[in-house]
Image (cartoon, rainbow, N blue to C red):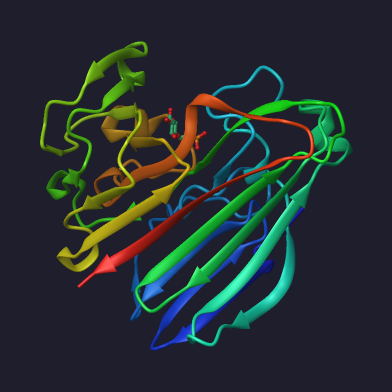
Length: 279
Ligand SMILES: O=P(O)(O)OC[C@H]1O[C@@H](O)[C@H](O)[C@@H](O)[C@@H]1O
């Protein structure tokens, strides 16, 4: 099991850093000029017994409850390997690469050989993510969900607007999975919200994140965007989340979850996300 000391810190200078816990390859901090951009609960558990509540856990190979293993799969509860010590690119940006392959343990839940690769690049005001899934089998096809469960830190979620979701269909998990179409130009959150927006555009913008700034999300091969905030009542049922923390986070998660990715033998799937603090 990973402990809290199993962290990798990318340092770009100017107090711009990114910290990754090898447990789940969870990004647990992203500071831009010393300002934290990600929410991590005060009650988050770092002893390897639970997924880390906050930051950016990786959801794979299942999104949501699962008959064969834990909710949101196993990638967020296993230790990943650091493939290179961090490298400074000619641009001054810092790159790190992580990976995970199948094990006896993953095969008890999901009996496939696989290789996950995760590449992070820390830029001046951006964090880039590239994630790959490879199927090394000669003859077996598998299917999976993949999602970056990003918790943004915000001063007050009620003042955030998400731009870009107008007209998208969404599955409302707070209403037994009923499907609706988003009619609002800007999506706001003022109650328990748990929605899978489908076929969302490659760019979304969240307003009023840290310091009243805007956060731009650019994504590739992630057709879905999950928007989640547990609000008052649901927060009480989450042991590793404070009752008073819901105003300070918004999850806007890029993923491939409303339909599975089907991966043929010997092929790979790649998806990416870029987060950018707009100034
Ligand atoms: O408590 P977990 O397993 O980290 O999940 C948190 C939330 O994650 C979201 O992505 C799901 O849409 C929600 O349904 C879920 O409650």
